[in-house]
Length: 423
Ligand code: DSN
Image 1 (cartoon, protein in one colour):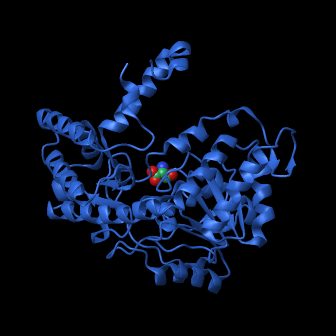
Image 2 (cartoon, helix red, strand yellow; image 1 turned 90 degrees about the horizontal axis):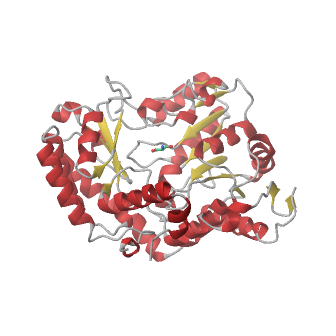
């Protein structure tokens, strides 16, 4: 039987592109640290009839009738998030991470208030105060930086800066930081200067729920996470907060910034949190870190300089330019041609440009979801080294792409069944 038969009939172009993407995800080693493989159960909820209805408002207080089931679904999602993080309040309606951060700021700040987040070029996020983003335009952004020697957070320095600029809110949580975040230090700083402590745990939620990274809750006043990164859920986000901010946060997302929630995503978030309660999820989270350490060690052995010297979490940031004379963009393109998907990235205090920076960012959530372990990480590290030392040799890249495809055929991808492709 044809796979995706309804799509085949209605829109074969899109069907073929989805199928090609499915095969790509199966055939390559995906190392982008913010990506993953959602389970079949998450995909079923995401692709369900829940996409058909509107539910503006919150469970029990909607503007439209017909909420007999959506109220139950959203309540389940909220309760699971609250239990998982031990927070007073959760809102599962943000469409993604950026609107979630925007809603938190809208709830607790006034335009012009000072915020402090890690500079984008050093591993912060656009919404943590970058100058061209709403967060840097609407608020007064005073970004903090990493320690130039250790390339790690320097809590004393952040504290000193906070005393000087007196922020209303400090953001902790990053997109390219390979080390454990000491949340208690942020709590201490925020208490001292009278700032709100906002945690953006999007990258590390799976690690937190799996017990291999400390949680910022209930210490943080507010927090957000996306649901599709190490958590392995659908594309979505949520906000968590202390009771004092609950009403403001709910109002900020709806009616402040959004209309109807995406009920299909809400259901899939609930499923992801149920999956995260399992012992298998804890083992997955622990293996993510073991894999990242193994891959980091191998890259280090091959002469790549690792930012901060290694990793404690799911992510590795490494120099390609100074280590091997190849700029990040050229490196990530060569890796992609060889079936290894990563993204080029600025390294702290980079002298190159964001479009062609000095380094590459990788992470292990996706390969861990496929059941790969330390021996496979060593193999991946060897391939990466070979690619990056022969980056312009198309024959080498093509040979490795073939080897990678063969290697990948032994590792199942959650949510993908290649038997579907046999027509
Ligand atoms: N795009 C995400 C990442 O790759 O880290 C951040 O939003």
